[in-house]
Image 1 (tube, rainbow, N blue to C red):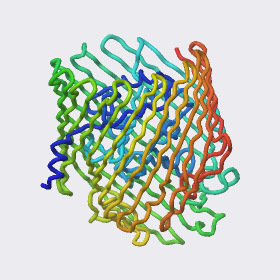
Image 2: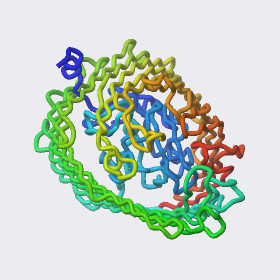
Image 3: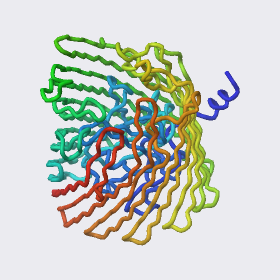
Length: 631
C-alpha cells in the first residue's frame, strides 16, 4: 500500500460532516448551531461537525413557500438543479458540479435508490413537503458512512413526528396551469406508542415542456402520495420506527429535447418500507438494526401520432422495474462524554429488469434487459471526538466488497478548530469515495458496457467562518474533487465509458445578517470549474457560477420572503447543447391566524423564458395559493 493510502486509512475513518453553513432560516443563528445533524452516523451539533452542512428547518420550508423538494433546494450554495420541463419531469440534483448520480438521497436516514435507472439514483424533485420536518444537505464524499453512494453529498429528508396526543391538518392549493392540490395529516401519541399518516394529491394541466411553452400541447401531471408511520418507545431503552411510503404518478412527457410529442406519457409507482430499531441497553452502548426494501416501477407509452409523419407508425412500450433491499447493523460505543466509536455492517442487493418493445412502419423490435442482480457488502469503523470545546474531529474507514468488482477501502477525516472563541472557525475535510456502475450502465443491451470500472473520488475542502457580531456572519469555502473513471455517455459509440480523470473545484461565499427580530438577509455565490483531464475540455451542462440572495420579514402573524437567484451559461459539448444563464425572482407571503394559515407564492415573477436543460422549457410566471387548517 502506498504511503498516501496508509495515511488516509489511518487518519480517515469518518462519517459525513463538513462545515456548518446554516441556510435560510427565520431562527437565530445560534439556535441552528446547536441543532443535531442526523445525516451523520452519530448525531452531532452543527457547530461540532467538520463538514459543510446546510439545514432547512420546518420554519424555513414554510417561509420559503416551497411545495416540493425541488423548490426548497433552489438557490442553495453549491447546488445546481437541472429539470427536463415542469411537474413530472426528471430532476437532477448536482452538488458542486458533480453529476446527479453522485448525490445520495435519504428519507429518515435510509438511502433511496431506483436500481433500474441510469445512475441508480432516485428522482425526488416533486416530493411534497407538508410531511417534512427538515432537510439536511451534507457535502463531500460519504462512502465511509453510507457505502458506495454519495460521492458529492448527502440530502437527508426527515419526516415529521407527532408532538401531541392528537394533531392533524387539512389543506388546499390552487395555482397557475390549472394546478390543484389537496393534503391531509393525522398524528398522535398514546403512552409508548405513536402514529402518523399523511395523504396528498396534486394535479396540473402543465405547459409544453419542449414546444412553445404556452401555445403547444400541454404536458399534464398528477400524483398521489401516502405514508404511514408507527412508533414504539420504551423509556429510552428500546425504540422502533416503522415507515411505509408510496407514490403513484402519471405525466405527459416528450421524446427528447425540442421534440414535442402529445402521445408520449409515463406512469410511475414507487413504494418503500423500513423498520429502524434501536436498543440502548446501557448508557454507553447503543445498537441499531435497519431493514428496508424499496420498489420502483416506471412505464413509458408512446402511441402513434397521426399529425406527425415521423411518428405516424411509431409506438413504444417500455417498463423499468427496480428493487433494493438493505440490511444494516451498527453499534455505537460512547468511550467518554465527547468521544464516540461506531461500527457497522451493511448488505445491499439491487435488482433491475427492463422490457422494451417498439414498432416502426410495421416492423417490431424488442430490446429486453433480463433480471440482473448486484450485491454489495461493507464494514465501517468511525470515531468522533473532541479534545477541547474548541477542537473536534471525525475519522473513519469503510471496506466495500462486491462479487463483480475488486474490494476497496475508503476513508475520510474532518476537523473543526475554533481559532478565536465564538468568532473565527476553521474546518478541514479530506476523504475518498467509491461507487460501482449501475445495472443499466453495465448490462443494457443497447448502450451498456460490461467493462465499466467503478468511479473513485478524492475530495478536499477547507472552510473559514467569521462571526463579526452575534447577528452577522460570513464564510468562505474552497473545495476540489478529483474523480477517476468517471462514467459518462459517448455519443460517438452510443455506449457508456470511463473518463480517465475529471476534476471539480471552486469556492463558495456566504454572508448571513439577522438585521433585527423581524428582518433577515443572506447571500451566496458559488464559482465552479469542471474539467476532463484527458481532453483538457470543460465538462458539459455545468455553469461557471451560481448565486442567490434573499430578504425575509416576519412577525407574529405575517411572513414575507423574496429571493433572487440564477446561474451563468452552461457549456456545450458534442451532442449536448448549452443552456443560457438566467435570473429569477420568487416571492411568497403567508398569514397565520390561530389554527389557520393562508399563503401565496409567485415564482418567476419576471416571467423569464429560460431552460435549465437545453431544449426543455421551465414554467413562466406562476401563482400558487394555499389554505391550511390545523386541529
